Length: 455
Image 1 (cartoon, rainbow, N blue to C red):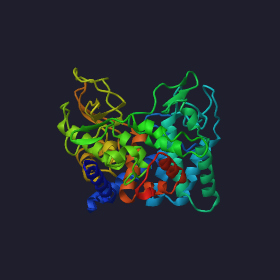
Image 2: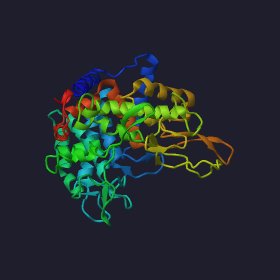
Image 3: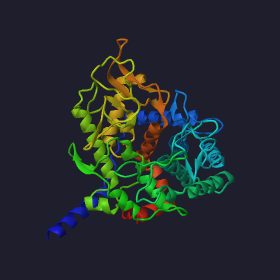
Image 4: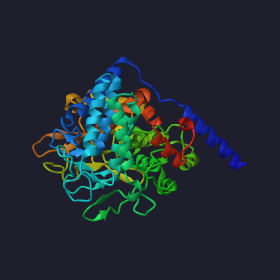
């Protein structure tokens, strides 16, 4: 009887989760603000990509190499720009083709320099002009995955029968099919985080819950280099389920880990075996993680300046560091994976607007007020040419007598979640594109997902 009761309770939770639409906020002032945020953030990708190679910088205005994940986000951003009317469809198609044609033609191989990648994977960072490996960075599995997610979103969007769009679709298939995901498993049950030509595979592997859901789904869905179906169970077996600030969920500290995969895949109402047993889907999991992150900031155990119900958000971002700081008892970090979870806390008073912005599709009822409040309180100190700068910290005491730190840079991998998740919040735009992509559908089904739109 008890098992039967558990079954029915779980069933109704799943049904209600699948049928519960995202709340919408429709007042005019909010609409104007979100329009501004979308357009300004889009402009980062449109204007800062290299004029010849079309690769997106890791950051700006500081001099920078290109981040292949940011380039993937930029590709998806161009589709949003066309859909919103910021640019024409033809302009978007030409930019996407410019971007991926450059990448596809770059030299590849196991050399230590002068190449962009190996076995279909790309190096984490590449030179903006040449496209060659930047210094000695790793051949990155997750960043290649995020690049491929962007490329597949373009494959699904550009479905017209003309030379440019036909070329985009063909290149997308070719580049995705070239990625040797099976090689990156390196004969283990979980995938390596990367590889160096100097020393081989990185020991660290993709396990525990984080941004790698999209990586595994792409690898499972590959028509040429697929990985075993039981890889997904090996991945979920390393999850850490815990209650944190009143939210029971699969924990991961920085919010980007709850956002990146779901920028591309709509997990509402679709379940793998792990989540079916827990009675929630991954969308709900990310919602709970966002609420827990906010609750931690509201509790503010570190007693940092400015944290409140509408000023919150811990994720990977820039930070003030300790140079020129007069706070003797605070270890301020530079770029770091800030976050809060049951088994992970990294917090130095630094707030990243992308934390709330990248969760806007999950929690518009708290994310939009947070973004509006930060904009209203700090204005053009943190909201400039391309929307929100990467991060700010109001707790620093500086040796010159000033108080507070505000980033000068925008980061492509933090701009992307704001732009893409805002589009998903508005009309499920990117989610609906990826539902049409056979590679994504194949990967989800091989992982054991079922229900909702997938059926």
